[in-house]
Length: 276
Length: 252
Image 1 (cartoon, one colour):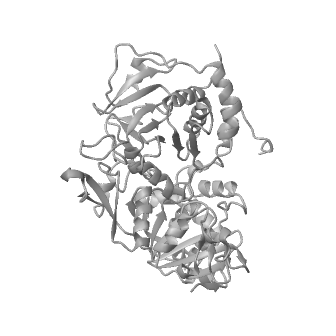
Image 2 (cartoon, one colour):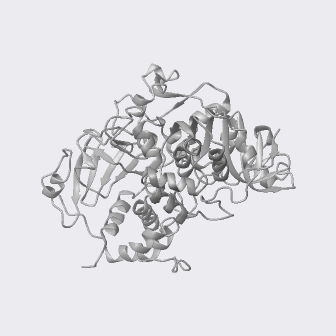
Image 3 (tube, rainbow over the protein chains, first blue to last red):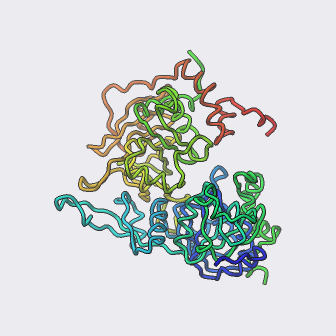
C-alpha cells in the first residue's frame, strides 16, 4: 500500500540507479522530484517518456543521470531544441531508442494488460523499424480469406518505476489525476509508482463519484510525497502557469557545456562526478 | 488589391484543403494550420459542422485519454485531417523529423519522430506544411524516414500525404504515382523559381495557375474571428502576425 513519504528526497531515494523510469509528457511532470533525483546523484536511468518529454528529460540528461532514453521526441517546444539531449545523442553519451508516440502508449497499454506484445498500425516503411529491430512485422493471423496483411508488433513496456505529479492524494495514497487520465494507464503498467502532489486531502478520493473515475487506487501507488509547486517551472493547470522566463534562461545557458555546468551549479544541481 | 501577409495566404490555402472534413486535429507548434482549421470550421458553419482540436488550446479537445484517444481516433478512421512537417521532405513524400547524417550520432539531431510514423498512415488528409522551401528542406531523399510517403499495396494504409504547402507553392500528392504534382504557385513565384528551390523532381502540368490571394472577406475573418481563438495556444503568433492581442495581455 502507498506510503506517505516525508518529502521528495525520501521519494527520490526509492528510485534506484539503473531503473527503467517512466515519465509523463505535459501536465503532470514531477520536476521537484526530478531535482531530488539529481541531488541524490541518480545514475544510468533508462528513461521511458510517455510519449515525449521536454525539460524533465533534458535536465536529467544534463545532470548525467541517464544511460538510455526511449522516446518519441525531446524538445523545448517553442523555445527550440533540447540542447543537452541533442549533445548526448550526437556523442553517444546517452543511448537512444527512437519510437513514435502511439507505439509507446500501446507498449504501456500492453504492460498494463500483462500481455507480452501488442500490434499497431502504421510504421511500415519507417526507419524506426530499422533502428528498433525488436519491433517486428508479422502477418495478421486473422486476415480476411488469407489475404496478406503485414502489421507491426511491439514488446510490452513495464517500467520499474513511474514518476509523476498530480493535483491531490488522500491519506490512504489514492491519487487524483484530474484530466490526465493516461496516468492511470501508466500506473497500471509500472511495477511501482511514486507520485508527488500539490495537496494531500483528508477526504477519501475513492468514495466520491466525482473524483473516483480520475483516481488511481493506492493499490498501484508505492509512495506519495507532498510537493507544492512540484511541477515548477512547468505548468500545473488549476494551480500555476509555467515559468517561461526561467526555461528561456536555461536554454540560453545550456547552449554550451560550460554554460550548462555553471547553470547546474548555480541551481544546486551539479552532477555528482563534478562535485566530488 | 488588399494587403495581406504570406501567413494569411497560407491559412487560406490550407483552409481550402480542409473543405468537407468533419474532424480536424492540429498538433503542436502549428499556428498556421491551427488558424486554417478554425477558418475551415467557421466557413462550414461552426463547431456543430466541424470539430477542430488544437493541441495545447482550451478549445474542446474531444478527448479524455489525452494522447491515447488521439491515436485511437486516427486508427479507427474518426480523424479526417492532420498536419505534419519535416526537417526534410522528399519527392516520394517521405518525411524526416529526426536528423541529418548517419544514425544515431548525426551531424544534426532534431527532436524525434513524434506521432508521424502512425498518423501519416491512418489519417486520410495529412497536409504537409513547411514554410521554408529550399533544396535544404525539400530534398531528393531524406536521411531518415520518420514516416514513409507510400507503401506496397498489401499494407493497410487509408491515410497518407494529401498536399504539401510551402511559402512558395502548393503541391498535391499523387498516390498512384507516389510523387508530388505542382498545383499552384504563390504570387511572386514561378514554376522556374519553384524548380530552382526544390531538391526533388515533381510533376508539372503545362499551365500552373497562381495561388488565389485571400479575399477581403477571408482576411476580415482571419483577423477578427480566427485571431482571438488561435491566441489561446499561440499568443505570440496572434499578436505579431495577425495583429491581435487578447485583453489583459497587453503588458506582456
